[in-house]
Image (tube, rainbow over all chains, first blue to last red; front, side, top):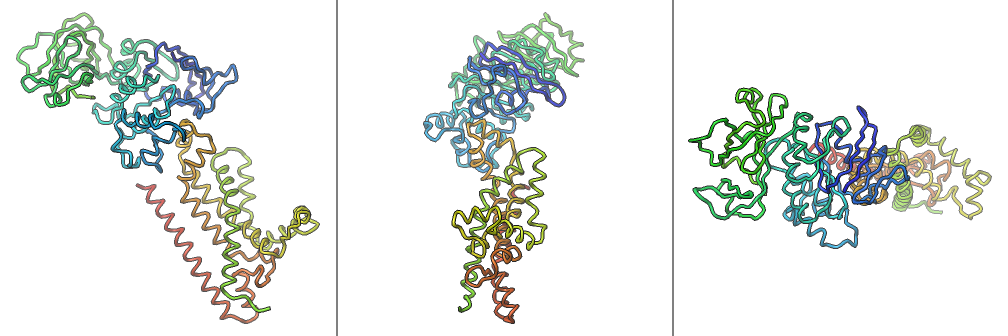
Length: 352
Length: 226
């Protein structure tokens, strides 16, 4: 449970976020410049002008009416900014240890290093790390302090369709292993759905939507021209492979994924399918090379610019396909229409 | 009384300059930090006051110090009560050089502190460090090149201070006579060769210091460009 009532004057509009979040896993969505970063900095105590009330699981860090305003060093809030902000004069080890008290146990350090898989980087300096590695080190540095809340600002690079540098799989691991409450700022509604139980959508400093990540999708498409809707699927990856493909099970559904992935089977594997890679047809698909063909039904169509984000329930899952508005109109894609979708084996890209 | 050797003059100069630099270092860093980080109209006033020794004639600064330190002066009375003799001792040399060198330490240190990303300092706070600890663990290590450059600059200025020193410390061989003062005195009494020997020493010393400072500054620029 995270209670937010944050007010902060900004240059272009006032930030005014009021939300009682029943969940500990919250995605913060919204276009660039809608005040998401300012909200995180206010919660971390890094914005002097911030007023209101902030409580995490009942513990207040800010309560202006009671004259309470903890300085950042006493808030115990782990902040992972977009640019990671590692200390350039310290190696990775020094960075991760920075926030640990001198008598702090090594267990927190060892655990943070293991979860974020940064053991091979410990002796390197930030200047030699890739963007994704920096992000992981920054997340390790934050969790090594055993914070009561994590604040993550997704790097803008994560908006591109590539997988490199994504923090999501590690955030999933942190969530499973430590259960620290978090606020995750992202432009990727698919990631929000995979990791969060609640979502806020901001516009010009105000909350325009609060609810489940599933319900936030429509608001996202409307509000954020940069939004992405990756299909993030969690399931079991078997060792066996059939006809060169790996077998990935999500519930009762069996999907064909790249065969080489089966070399590293996992009970909890996570895959990403870009919405561009989901082919939609209003006729039964036959004679296509794609290994994954499912029948389903359109549940929603959210136009955004030249695109129409088309949600399709198929195989017990909700898929998002990116089609042009022209194509959506020609095919007559509206809620309730029966469709078939096809996804190539190699469109399944493994996140973990 | 025999004239002191070149070596003893050299050592006295070095010792006094080192003491003066060490004394102004903590205070200078604090002022540089305030000027770099805090807002307010008082900043311009403080900066102007601190820059005065750079632009005033050194003898004028010396005379002001002399007035403050004479027995009837405000500082002099206090020092007298404490039984501390300053005027015309090596302490006066250290005081004069400290005052004259102070702005040369503060300027580069201030620039170095200004170059430290304030968001890194905020991150240090967020990770549980109090402001003083953030200063020690983040600001100092990131600004050390500029601080060192300022310290070397202040030290070399201290080695060569003349005008303010002669006003409050005199030119007493073996007690307050630094290299700068000895060069003046030897030339005055026609010992030009002996004066030139000292000049040679000062040139070598100054060269070494400025060289070191240049190398440090160049490294910093390259690092910033990378």
